[in-house]
Length: 460
Image (cartoon, helix red, strand yellow):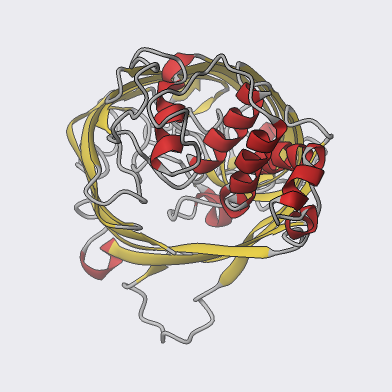
């Protein structure tokens, strides 16, 4: 029971604080202990005091009164806990209700938190430049998002979010014009089945990533309507779902069409408007936050601006399915290495060459040093990445990558740095270099032009 209570406390306290540099007050907890980080964090936060101020005595059984004290402190941090953590703390509170009452902390205080709404948000000011494609005011845009999350009960959480479009400063319209759209980018219900391992998610997600949150997200990473079921026991996660892509990448790929061929065997408009996907992912999690996974997506079209009334919409999708694999490996406490591979099953035409393409592939590698944490001022990271994408490898849509414009038929390097200059305020800069066109027949006006991106992000 001591391990269970400490696990709940450690997970909850770690949501908003980092105590990696705190001194270890206990002589019987060595630095190589599996529990070292959690014990130090809890001691530094004043949650645990140990025995005689010097000994943790991890093997000693605790009394119900001591356990109730720990649960009371976990209840005080409920607003920082996830749905799964809240469910565990609820069970512990029920178990120690009598002891909590004697401490003056009634379980009803915990129940009163149900239904409370927590609001968060962020604002981004962004600069993106590529000679001839994004110049002058067109290089600048902004976005503002607001989120509200309500804990309906110990199993159900509802999240609603509003977002502006990426508003360009290059627009000649008035600031109050109708093009400044605000839309619902999150309308989501999460439900766990009485177990933190199982979660059902229904509705719209604002930051859904094709390949999962730990993959690079080359193909897509944005607003997505879906029904998704996931099993996650902390060591392995199995995810299955079905949904529809809902956002473009600022280049008009979804709303306006990626490109159109007027005649020939590939005649049609190629974009993601109306495209749905069924998907599955299997991921394994290892020590020190490392993970690896494999994923599969099958694509179908259901109407949309590219569909034609011939009873076979898939003809103009030009992509049947894809599969990918990723590995994200943490080395020590500072280094992360990410490798991602994807292969698209398509026999169609390339965007840049309009030549036949067959089952194009993309390779991505990224190495990061450090970790920028919005809650920790002066934290930072620096990274370098390599992209090798065959012509036709990018399907369109809103990529999760920092890149824009030309996304396939290239070999390219990139580098960047993220710096948290104040709490909840981060500055980032990214730059591509050594970009080369893979097919010499590509349009020279679009080929081999380097990309620059810089942005401020503020969370509130």
